[in-house]
Image 1 (cartoon, rainbow, N blue to C red):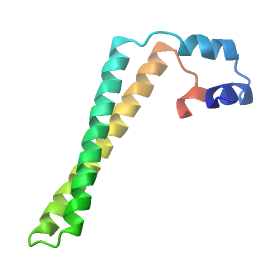
Image 2 (cartoon, rainbow, N blue to C red; image 1 turned 180 degrees about the horizontal axis):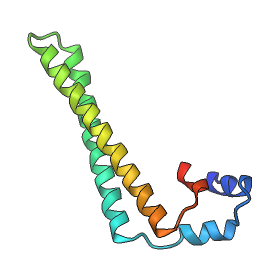
Image 3 (cartoon, rainbow, N blue to C red; image 1 turned 90 degrees about the horizontal axis):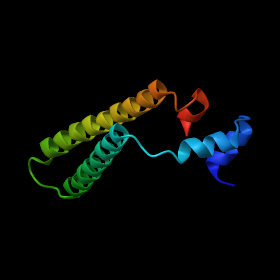
Amino acid sequence: MHPIYRTAVKDRVNVSSVIQILNQPLAPQTLILLNQLLQQIKVLQQYMQQQAVVQVQPLKGNSNAVLHISVQITKTKQQIQNLQVTQYSALYKCGLLSCTFVYW
């Protein structure tokens, strides 16, 4: 059983309403936010790869590089969280989601 369907059944939500919502085309702002989220995830992956490389290479000055990359990872994770909050807020304002579906 699909997780969305299970959630709908568990929370006694009309499954046809859920399907209707999911079949709606995405608004341009939603696509923009999803694209930004994808870009930040790619940046995070790059930083994490850099961190792995720097940590295994015992070179002078690596501690500064590790610290810089760690800070960038933290900032990128925060940006991802902010984009997720923005997306959820937009969905609430549009009335497309109830509290039940925010936690998918």
